[in-house]
Image 1 (cartoon, rainbow, N blue to C red):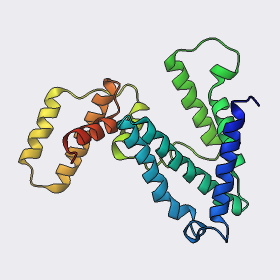
Image 2: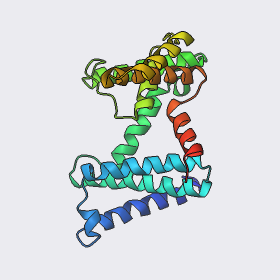
Image 3: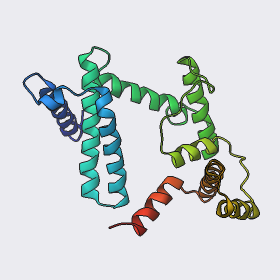
Length: 221
């Protein structure tokens, strides 16, 4: 281990021990009674606070928020370790194995690949992993992502999704202004949002980020 790696290893081990102290019977009562389910909302909140700090381009705030998120990972792993299911070591080993497995173009000899070929290879490896774990495309439950992000991720799997004609946009918007039926309006708004996701993807943008940034710029207190 190099002299640069040792301080990192020491610091992460100190955090690991700190979490164990907080979780111990003589530690913090609130920390001790937490469960994976009770931590879910905190993990989600910390992840969004990291995103907010990135949007604010505040390096010090990003550092602090990443620390909060890292603490949640250590915390959750420690709970499962107490149940003799897995430890933080297994978490680290699993992600290292996954990264090496999904990057054969880096860790195995072979010809250089285009970005498109690398993406296809990545998706193929993910599908093989699902099949080994007993999952298929039909029974694989997607992660509960924010709606715009989930839509964009799903649409990106179909690279030939045609963009809507401008006249279709006009027609759908016209219907919305004339409609009184709520369920039909809901369907049309969903379709319009999906088209906006496709347009964002066409410009190499993330629709979720676009909306979040516009909201922050125009509705901040």
